[in-house]
Image 1: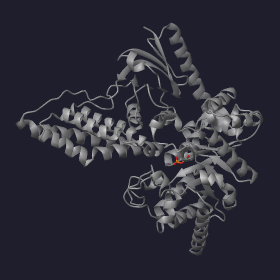
Image 2 (image 1 turned 30 degrees about the vertical axis):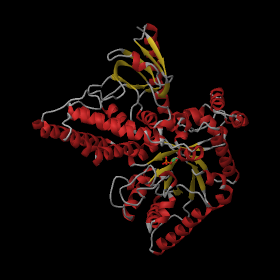
Image 3 (image 1 turned 60 degrees about the horizontal axis):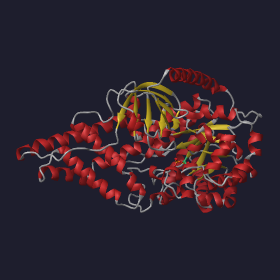
Image 4 (image 1 turned 60 degrees about the vertical axis):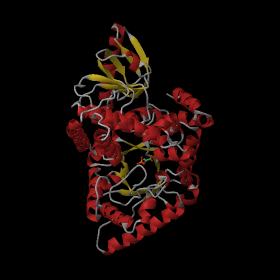
Length: 571
Ligand SMILES: C=C(OP(=O)(O)O)C(=O)O
């Protein structure tokens, strides 16, 4: 019987196909004992399963590159850590050896024990990690029964689940899943962001779908409006086919925008730069007609390896980005390790009590002998090949900018002395992501050449809401009056002082935020190339003067609902 579910459209695109339902993970295994002489073979079965999961995760990581390697890699690292956790492994062995439990039941006992510890913690971050434990244990359980935890045979089907982890999303896409429908989660979650960059249709928060939909039911999914129809009737099918036609036409039209300017209806050119962290991203940025690279994340060079890249290796990487953009400006951010960007080089501290507030970004670069100098040397050498700007992460004070500036000048003198060809002026900019930097900007704006607002971190620090904690749901959002007012102040000051300013957080890559950012006076965006054309299309439909006239109403908004209303009114 026809039934409709309404969720949030998290990633555009329409899909029609059979449902594959995955009920929330519950290891519903009854208590099961084994004979004494079966202990060794049960242990061997378990160890083989764990080994198979390690192999699966390794293979998954090998398939990742570019932004995916960074975004999904974090989750894979966490899952690998959990998989190698001695307490988990020894606990399982103990339960099988001494308790004579089957491997399945031992897994269930260990899952419940670890989840119990996490559930009892006050810290919502740890509570939210139970999902990761379930995924790791679920993978081992699937491997014990030689099933693929990534749901084999899902090609051409639509997954209906409570949530889907980012790492899984990549695997599901590789397996040919048509679309994803979840009953929980937020459109700003990592998985939603990832689905958008993978162009995989996704609806989030389709309440009731798990209770009503069964394997094999036919679903029509609209990733734009968030509508999911089970057993669609003739009218639904017509609507679906119409959506597919519209979507195909839109893609075609979008592709035509590659060579068009990002110009508002009233003729103002807006610069759309790309965020990148790999050769592939740079090539895509170039192909989509980005004005340049607005944020090149150099962490990519330092992650997933034990030894530091030396000056020459860094130089070659930065030079290739500059060459790849054929004369368009390239903005390279100095190392932003620490907090959620964990490394294996031993540079970042391991056990900080509060890593997001710890030794990260420029603080780490300044604290480690020679680290910044080596990177600045490599960057300045690359500046001999085309326009390059240097961007500093996690700036919170004037002193930090000055310290880097002094080092930059001294490194430039040395390089010239050594006979290197470097640009006469390499602009130095600061990320505005720490509220203190935003508030005290007037005190150091004179010391920088440009600014880039990292809204991902700015929002987390301003609202005291961890960006990686899905349990916080709507609390982590740019749709807060404090965020908008701070953005307005920072953009206004930069514009008044003639300093170029971009927003380079996820917010800039979501077309729905474009009118709001334009109203606040922003002229430059830096975003993942996957959504660049959609943002360009949105900008081309905006009347900048009209939006600016409505900015006071936006800034008067007292809550999220009022901001959303403003966004609705302004299209
Ligand atoms: C772009 C940003 O930096 P990160 O690489 O930490 O997401 C940001 O914080 O908005």
